[in-house]
Length: 445
Image (cartoon, rainbow, N blue to C red; front, side, top):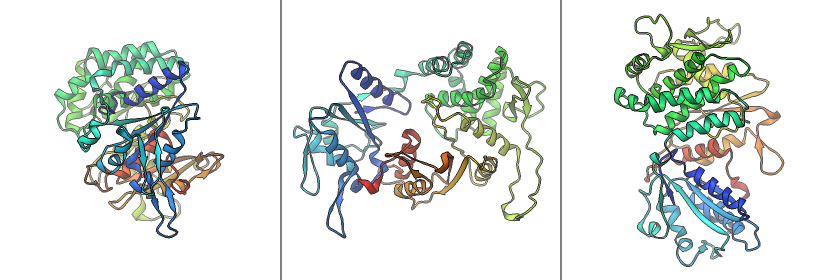
């Protein structure tokens, strides 16, 4: 069991270890499954109420295929999801000396030498002593990896994979703000009214993701050192204090100014860096006040209840969303999952901002799907909503028709029911689709 908070490097540790063993002529492959994204019946199998036939489960099928002595691979079945006693207690016979999976239909599948079980979890709050005593635990602290190595890896990747020559300049500037000036420590001391708790590594990755989106506007242009610092400071300001209330943003803005950040000149009273954005129309990174475009009423199909009026807040939200979603899908950037989360109270125009952003999508190569979550939304409901918009290609691949890009808008994402273990199962399959780019086909198990 690998135990540790989000962003501590659990997945990377597993990937590097298996790749190293592969290079030592010990072929390994990882089969990843999120046990909370499916029900216990879908995981282990269930007897059909209609035909009385046995319907195999996802894990039992994977287990049967992986435990073949004739297999050329050493398979690591990785459970990437919260632990609870409902699904993991069924593995007790596998984890003890018997090493046999016993199913409800009486089938017994023994474990072979070329198969291993790995659990990747945040904590063991809901695990029983019987389960914990059968596994070895490796705890990975958030401070073990830190974020300096993440910054170095990001800059090296820009040089190696994107053929960008700005990696050294970016490394110096990002290191200056995060390491030398300790922006995260300053944020913790200055700002108190946080909307959503986050790990330090998440602040860093959010900064790098937003910076990647901003730099796309200058891919064929030569920027000065001050322009690069403007881009880093803008991304830093939104990634760190963007999850705080306005009064805390003002305090963080004052801290940035006190450290010599290249702020917008001639700031009016009560104006901060959050009232500006970086304009790239002239080839440089120029500060420009956030101001929505002039609104024009629609010429036809005029419905007063559906009118959306752009505001300064919606302009800022659209700018940030566009920066993240503009990162090409082909970019080998494990930090960015090409997803954006809008947080705010009721009536703060989150839905309206996203709908206005969707109106500007190119209809020829973009699709837009809105899914409303409620307390009754189950993982299978979400999966069915995605599958109905996609065509199944050759093999197991599925994608939107005509090579279009599908943008999925999940409204009221926090609404699904929290179970007795403190998990939201519907959000687990959302995370799985974002992180791995797919899910298991329930009708083909």
